[in-house]
Amino acid sequence: MEQWKPSRVYMVMEWVEGRLLRHILAEAGKIDPPRAVRMALALCDALDYIHSHGVIHRDLKPENIMVGCEDQIKLIDFGIAAKAGARRLTFGKLSNIMGTAEYISPEQIRGRRGDARSDLYSLGVVLYEMLTGKAISGPQSVCGDERAAASRSRPATRSESHSII
Image 1 (tube, helix red, strand yellow):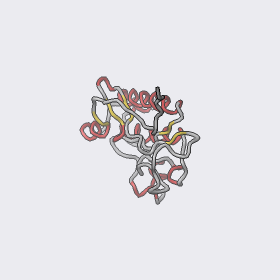
Image 2 (image 1 turned 180 degrees about the vertical axis):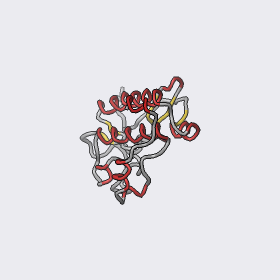
Image 3 (image 1 turned 60 degrees about the vertical axis):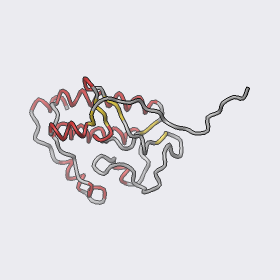
Image 4 (image 1 turned 90 degrees about the horizontal axis):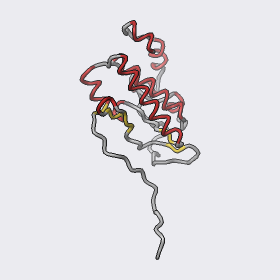
């Protein structure tokens, strides 16, 4: 009997019932601080899991976060994910910069691969957007210094959210 050998590496993901965080933000504008923090902590757990398996998402943004019942979080779209220590998990030779401008980490802007810290940076940007209803900066920040100006601004949030943050 011939032994079966896989010919390709592939990822299989479950079907997830829920809504994109982007759609929730579009409807609500911003998310109540306790809920946003719960969601961010669930994202931390998801990132911890993939990072512990050597995978870096590299494109964390509201469009790639599914929110299920009771705010269960699932990361989706690993299209530009990278495996630590490997040349590349997926093809991405279209540009040196990989990721979405508003959520991309500074090292990715500089054309570097990034690591788990890059995903954590993006998580911080997503949390900022959940709390304020606004993205931290625009796509033009990839080429300019707008991100620096945005990082110096403090959004007008309710006082109790400052103690949570």
